Image (tube, rainbow, N blue to C red; front, side):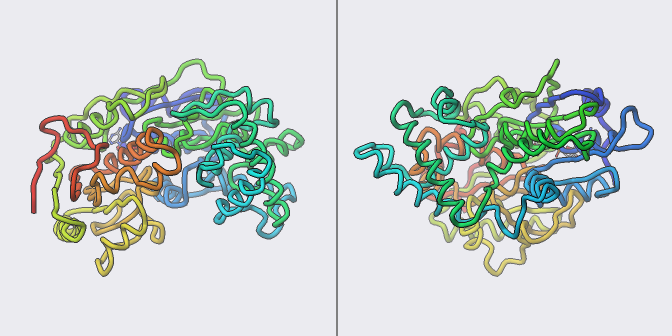
Length: 460
Ligand SMILES: Nc1ncnc2c1ncn2[C@@H]1O[C@H](COP(=O)(O)OP(=O)(O)OP(=O)(O)O)[C@@H](O)[C@H]1O
């Protein structure tokens, strides 16, 4: 274990009171993950004030392994889990998990069947021209908010949708949700990964045994739903604490949910602005990207301060076609891999397949990646790069024809799609410590900032 020496407000955050709710917001690279681990370790340490068994919640399995490597891993009093693993484990203890009764992959197929079934009740409604993926997203939002009945949904304000739906269309969405639950139940699935949180809360309300965890620390909290956060708050001991770390600039599922709707009672929000990861030149690109109008506005966004670390300007390479982009990315990866970790970050696994075929590169959902990883080439998607960092980051296919991805525009409409894809690009760019190279062919994506002097622009 070799954690950095906390600076400024960081130490304060580690030792925040060990009771009640705490919220820490910070932009990329400000040390949220490291401080989440340090706070959780502190709270679990015998002898610390109000110490007790502590749960550290993280976004996915790759980050759980990354955190385990950073913190020394699970002990009797310190557990690292994804939300899904925590929820499933608790419901198993409550006797509610039988075989495979949580619907994971294939969910959109169930939603599609529900949409077809519901459409017959709403002849002529334009809403039913939308793709099943749109309905899946709306159902995730409804269950993530924890709405118990139709009235609650009808009265709700849907933040984060640029084109909100109203009246009859909203009633029809609820109808789709009810059909979806029926179709799912008839296939013997009791839950999906979104609505499992509703049952966790319900079970916790019935459960008067002592709570398993005294303290719960949540990293990447911006991508958990309010109902998931509420269930974690219910799962912590009444004399314990819940600490939420998040960055709303990196909220990549377009749900636009705020910690404020999660029932956390917080006296003062802590804010981290000092970036310890990116060079100034890389941070400037991220700041310019997040300042564009389509990036979205929210009180929860923290204005970043550009760091002072030296590094070359990011390179923007205009290629003649995709083949040339692939060649540039591969050559650059091989050159930089001798010096440190290099990540090729792509929008989809299919894109990465094109770039990395035959290249000596490790796919990051199959190998554990640690914060002190050996030099070499790694590849991962925008979504799965979250929380990680690399010496160099290479991003292919940033032309206007592929970004924002057409599928996202089809599912959610142009405005929503731009915001979602810009946040994904933001996550990818802020993974780079010192070198960033972006390639495109045709026109560059309109999501990339065009301010003078941000990039060194070249042609191969
Ligand atoms: N006080 C510090 N001194 C030196 N380095 C630090 C300090 N705090 C954090 N760092 C380093 O800054 C980098 C970013 O930290 P971390 O991953 O915790 O940030 P984060 O806020 O979770 O970022 P993101 O949200 O972008 O994933 C890491 O390399 C970490 O070791």
